[in-house]
Amino acid sequence: MSDFKKIETIKSELILTNNSTVNFPKKITFKFPESYKMLVTKIKTTEISAECILFNSVKSVNESKEFSDLDYWDKEFEIEDIKNYWFFGANGQGDSWILHQSDKVFFYDHNNGEISKENLIDLELSFDKWLQFAFLNRQFEEIYYNESLTQDLKNAYKSKLLGLSNGLAKNYPFEI
Image (cartoon, rainbow, N blue to C red; front, side, top):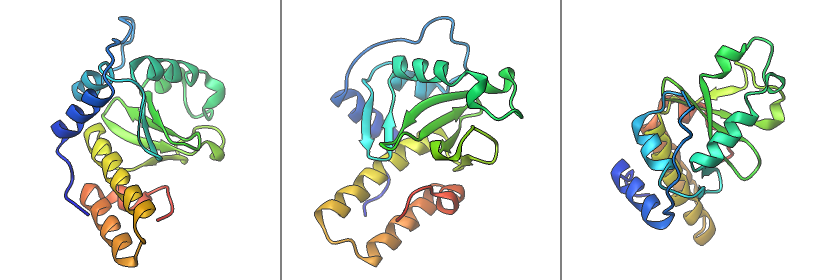
């Protein structure tokens, strides 16, 4: 497996291949990382890998608005808490990638019921690190589908996950 792609290379590739410009509504008060805001206002919703679909600004606004309903959240969350979370992506199974205002990425498996602190998986990733993960995941999928997947390749992938974050390697939500 090759080294991690640089963040600027990833962003340039996404913008070049999925170009579309749509800004966030002015009334959105979420404090986005600048790199996130810059990217998703310039792309269409994009499947980077099967596990990592990055929403454009319109899709993320709509998803976050839908999930702002208290019925989706455990009673431990109040409406002010929910405003700290932004739904920025999904995977092919209906699970969500969620960004906290602190630039911390969480994974939420929709099969776990209400969104609670216990089922928001902290992968110890920032948004930029999530992009690197998404492209690493794409590379792993290409190897998986085009070559025979050996234990050495699985170990190399796990090692790369650990290189991105301890939380990702420990709490990776998918089967390797």
